[in-house]
Length: 114
Length: 118
Image 1 (cartoon, rainbow over the protein chains, first blue to last red):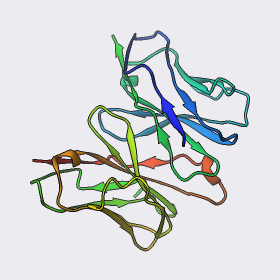
Image 2 (cartoon, chains in turn purple, red):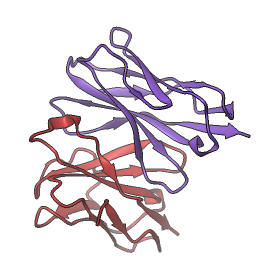
Image 3 (cartoon, one colour):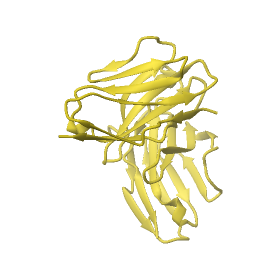
């Protein structure tokens, strides 16, 4: 079974600064995908960024980038130039290429302060 | 519609009553998922549909929980004899599933149904 761990229940950052959210996972699979989802108070889960395990290059989406360390089974999210609208819960998630289920971490609550 | 739609948005029910939660996935999405999110916690997998069949029901917490899907479209999650511990947000998600994109297609989530059992 796969597990996903987010060790930071809450974090805060000043507007315009950079913050990194941590995620580690455990799997015996070699082919899988990793995701970061954002959940604002509206409750909807919004995909922020995704990474295919077979790709060595770290994924980047505008102000969001990841540091994917496959050997260490680590998948951190870096948010640059933080904005007030980035305030939300952030969930790291894993799915193996052969699996049916997206496994989520417990989430990190991020507060961006003006 | 353009996205995954869930109804009702909020539901308050008395302990012991049955409730039905509805999910309308994105048109053409063959895979449909139900997750439960307790207050301040992560998402807990409940059940997965591929088409109208449910190859993975491993997450259903008890026999009070059941789900069905018809026409490879709408899904309903039914909770019988609700308990206070069932209070949570129930999230539905859909994806194109296996096929052209395989599993690198991300899940598209609805806004969830907040269930409160009093």
